[in-house]
Length: 517
Image 1: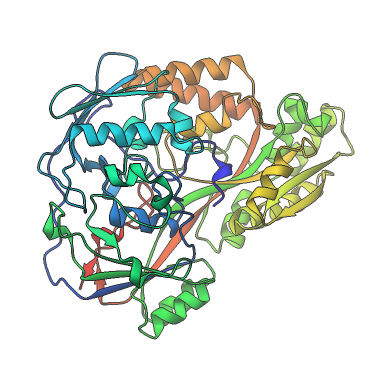
Image 2 (image 1 turned 90 degrees about the horizontal axis):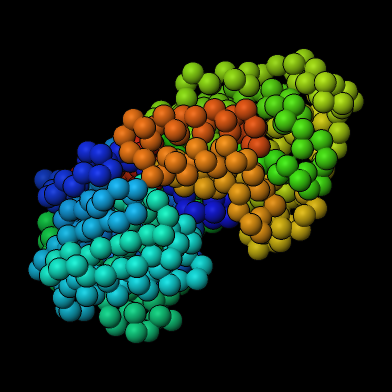
């Protein structure tokens, strides 16, 4: 998934141990009992953009590299439960969700043998916040980080932020703590590892872009969490190639996709899947860049009614997806089931709304589609076919390169853009889809919606959820987006592996949890 689809970060979220203002649960994740040792051979479709945690990708497959060598302050465990990492507990301080404290685990060392102290954590976090392109740093804003005791770190943020637990968890890599040696040589971070995780990169047994070899960190504080003598991540170009390696015994874990599921099942491999992301169409802002009709709410609502979401989810995604009409994810507190039929498929109603808005014969507009993200691109084409039936004609600009996509998006020539983004908390997707952002073409500017979002960021508990629900209903009414379907991620493993645990709240497979069967 292209990281531009979400201005913050992507993927995952979870429920807290208690409430946002409560202290997190402490303890450590126990290793599964059974065998250990040997080599785990993993196949990814994506090489790491960088081994620098601040520059590494967190999409499926690309997220595998950094967590092997770097421990985060907070760990996102199974079922979306936040668990201790290098921090043993954490909590918000005061009101407004603007101050966050973490208690740092004692007795931990980096792979190079130096201690993970409060001072080391502070310096690493300051390095992270100073990164000019890291999406999490941009999302949080200019924060202050300081030691507030022998074992406590305090983070103060400029604006209310109820999702610091998520943002500082293993799912984003942002709180992957880097040693002093790594901070002193930032260029080396791209191809070497300087963490306190269970493994270290074996540079001599690694070929960039082809395969990456990790061996145990002899200084790791939790020896029971090291379940293999070696983990090798091999990069291949297609799911068919990955599946072939798994079937021949050359791999133990691979990424899959909707087109190879039946082959994997026929080969009697273990198949795991869960909803991971959703896709749809962003419409231009109320300035109607590139297409004046889109400044009319009736037109935007008509476009939503004109999409046969159920057929797309069941047919195009082979029944592995779910139709959605909101940017929230079904099954989470932020998805309103009561609004699930707000934009039921109704071409005749779509035509009526277009006529009422003054466009009885439809209109034309252009759309940018990022073809390197197949679900998003394929779904966009299906939407375009549905819109043709009500008279809306779309001129498509297909782009496979991320930089070119960005340039086309910002060119002000296109009224629509296909999007795909991974599961994330309300705070993050609201920032991308509900709030104005200077310098972007898609710029929903509604004072009532902005007020509801900002109030929810400072609230907690039932008040927070009520405000979020109101924001969702307001966004649905404004219809700046045309959400279409959620889709799934797939993993295949040989019978020699156990410990796979993925679900909608944590769809990205954690290699550190796997062990020999």
